[in-house]
Each structure stands twice: as structure tokens, then as C-alpha cells.
Image (cartoon, rainbow, N blue to C red; front, side, top):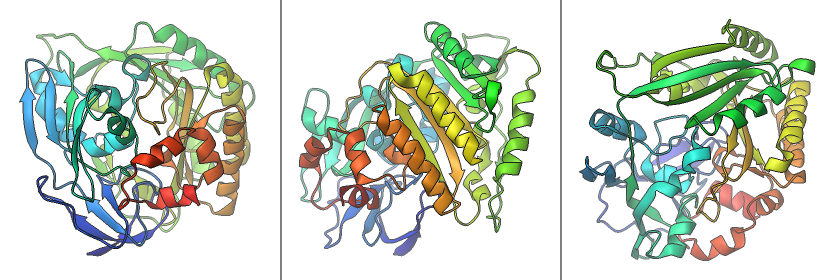
Length: 434
């Protein structure tokens, strides 16, 4: 079946043939055009697209293979969603070791993008918690890869963007929790200096930290926002069982983006001032703390038919404070930005993957409505700032970085090419390798 391809950012638009995989024991199809594994298409740019080629949809690989509730070791096929894992394991006292801002990602996609979360300063990235995986190549080769077996292939596949072959199953180590509740604090801060002070103060005692910032604020309020930190709450017999979260829906794609300078400024003013107290303490279910946007089905439609471009970068620790200020000033001056601009500090734990994005420093992520040439010009200016201090841009959220910059951001790219399956490619890889 040929289909129009779109990532979560709805840009670019591609055409590819989709073949669903449903049997992990079966060989991959033969093809004269390049293939690419596809999870749940929650990457934002073109790393999950394969224009003119074949997408191997892995959502049909959705079986659990083993789970030990005593140790929290889970083995499942690669198409299992994080949301399904949470439904299974949280009632048994376990939680994902690392999770991104949506629970609607597959295990295979999480490995291929080496996803990170609010606890990177404690737990590193998802790849650190993968105990083993099976890699299926287009020549029929199957390899069990782990930190101790086929180690080079393991390191290439973590963060390898699906290019080393199809991950058929994986074994992951979960982390123990008392239940679905989180003990949280939200601190209102007035500028970037306060953010960095809060971040340093919070890393020791809080497993999860993240901030929303007002990317439209300027002057003395540059980078103001709300700093969230939290831990899994201890067991309490007084708490009622968690009720299912209610989800809203974006029912259609409007003819134009609902995110524009006027709506952005109004939303950010309201969102910043909605917290009247400097600090708010709460006990909440894990879903709104980890996955606020999952509460709105198809929220990406609000950006209209042209979609949007998400931009996430990381800059090294020694340059973090000055560079983040320069990035936020540039964004505010351009009138762009998003409702949910996220700022966080990564920890020092090195990622295993040859192309993994997380590394020590500060990371900023936000969305830009696709306004054509002015949007791309703004992102190029941000690239120049990030590149100038030795930072990097996240491939899973990119649709336009240059190949020259990609190769500087990821200096191990050449070593990685030895592990690419000759039958695999993607729109992203062809773009950055041209």
C-alpha cells in the first residue's frame, strides 16, 4: 500500500509504500528500493520518513514475551507502546526507567532515537536501560546485541535512527515505584539566571526536573518560566486508585496555524501568571506530570496544513548560560516560538549510541509554525549559535539541518556508517549525507 507520509510535525510530506510487520520470526521483504523501520511516527521531522521507499511498520510487533514482577525485567516486541507498558507494570509497582514527553512511542523507536526524559541527570537516556535486543538485517542475519554481546552493533543501534536494521524485540530494566502518584513542586522564576540556580539546587534531591519558559518574554524577564521538579510518591493507604485521565481532541486541521505571535504572547502571559504563588506543592498522577500534551489527541493539527518544525538543541555546560540567553533573545526577536518551550539540564552520563543526542549541558526544545522561508532562516540563525559553541541538534526532531552541521554535531557519524544495513535508508539520512 502506498501512502502519504507525515511525521508528528506534519512536515515534510512524502510518499512511500507501507508494509506491516506482524511476525518477528519472519524474514524481511526483499526490495529494490530502500526500506526503513517505522514505529508510531512520533518523530517530528524526516528521520522516520523514507520518500520513494518502503516503511516497515512495526506496530504489528506488539507482543509481550516475558515480565518478571520481582525484578522488573521486561522483554517485549519492538512495536509495543510505552502507554501499554505503563498500563501493565505500574499496578505491579514498576515504571519506565526513562520516558520522553509522550507515552505513545514504541520500544523500538525509543531505542532508535535513544530518547531522554526529565530524569536524564539521574538515569541517563533510554539506551542505558536496554539489557538486550535482537537486530534483523535485510540479508536475513539476526543478531542478539547487548552491552556484552555484539557490543559494537548494540552501540550503533541505540540512537541509530533505524538504519542498522529492524529491532524485533528488546529487554529493558524497569524502575521500582510505590504507585502511580508523583510528589511535585512548581517554582515560578523570573529569568534564566533563576532557572540555572533552581536546576543546580534540584539535581541532588529530585529525580525529575524540567522547565517551561516564556519564549516571547524580553528584557529583564528573558527566559522567565515555571520550574517543575518531582519524585515518585511513597505508598499511602489514603490515596484512592487513579482515575483514567480525560483526553480532549483536536478534531480537525484548521486552514491556518492557530499558533501565531498574537496567540503565543497571550497564552504565555496567561500560563506564566496562572501560578499565583512562588511555589506550589502537589501530589498528582504521573500522566499530567510526564505527558501534558498527551491529554490532547492530535494536538499537532493546531499548526495548520503546513505543519510545524520542532527545534531541540543542546549546548555544553561551560557555554550554557550565555548561549541559552542568546538563543532565547533570538527567538523572541523573531516573534516565533511555541506554547510549550522546554528547558532542561542534561546530566554527565555519556550515551552509549554512536549517534545519540543527549550529552552534558542545557537543552532547549520548542515548536515553530511552518512559516516558510522566514522560519527556516530563524532556525539557521539558531544553528549558527549552537554550532558556534560545539552544541548539537536532535535528529529525531529535525527536518532541515545541513549535512555539514550534522557531521559536526555527531563526529562519530563516519564510524556509524560501517553498521548501516545496505537495504536501509531514510529521508533524513539521504539529506544529511548529500
